[in-house]
Image (cartoon, rainbow, N blue to C red; front, side, top):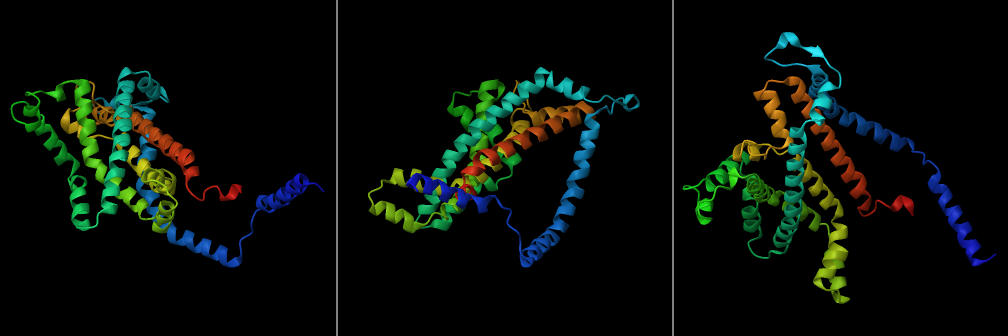
Length: 315
């Protein structure tokens, strides 16, 4: 038998057990039942708290329901979805949301990684450095947004005075840039905290061995640190992307969504609480929910398979 035939035979024999369904022992089945029993109270509470509001929102999205004219309520099916998806206001708000999400998350990831490296490698005053770095994240978003609004108020704010009393919040592009900067300033510590947890999982012995072998700092970072941090990076990106896509408070305080700076959450708020149009507002909320679900699925399927150990079943 040739070597190729032996290898093919060995591979076929070795792959056969992997295709069989592994039967659980009685102890493993008992542990699984116990796990479900322990999780069931939390699952029931989550379903009770979230299932009814989501279901009611779906129901309202299929109705023509305006609190100004409640007597004219009627079932319209998917007409509300057609009205929203054919409206330029929805696509304008969605484009603003995507721009803010992409730029704020990407820059926060880079700065958060730098912050995590600084906090991880600090030898003296490590607790002080970590506490100081997390101060922006500890400030309530609304209070921070009012601070940014005051800073850019002409003839009053210090940032406006530094740029010749400019008023960037009155211009679409400049206002979006200010919103992105405010988001980065607020959320970079959170990103750094999550990445710091991933850095703590990288073995120091592996780093030292690579250094002895002559690997540079950049090579150790790209070939050892980053691959081992992929699970932490996935969690950080997923959390920040979902949070940034649902941005509301920063925009509401800084610009109130004026001059084309409103995100999809601001559009839903305007329809629900200003126009009192529960049908269209609920439709926008459901569309936001669908977008968030799509983003989470893309992250989990696209990046989750790259996590260390996730390919063991394919070997």
